[in-house]
Length: 75
Image (cartoon, rainbow, N blue to C red; front, side, top):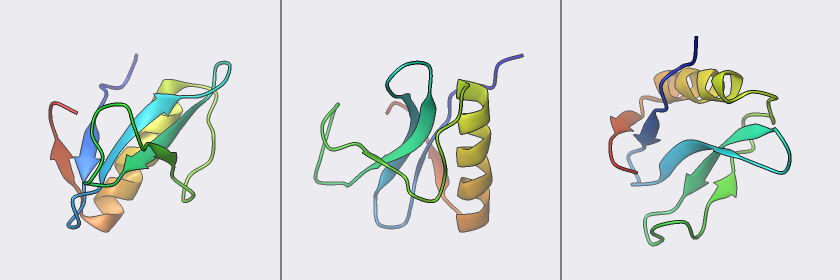
């Protein structure tokens, strides 16, 4: 069963979502509010690379809950 893709935003307006990397690895990434689209996404140091999307999404969901980030739609 695959987790639904969820994106988040923090109080500064930074956006967070899971993205693929080289090969079959996934990690949560962030984008500052002055960037848009596919530019400026950077790996989130608080989490590690995961072999599946679901594992990476679970990491991001846990971090978002701990830090009080709001779910954002349409990223």
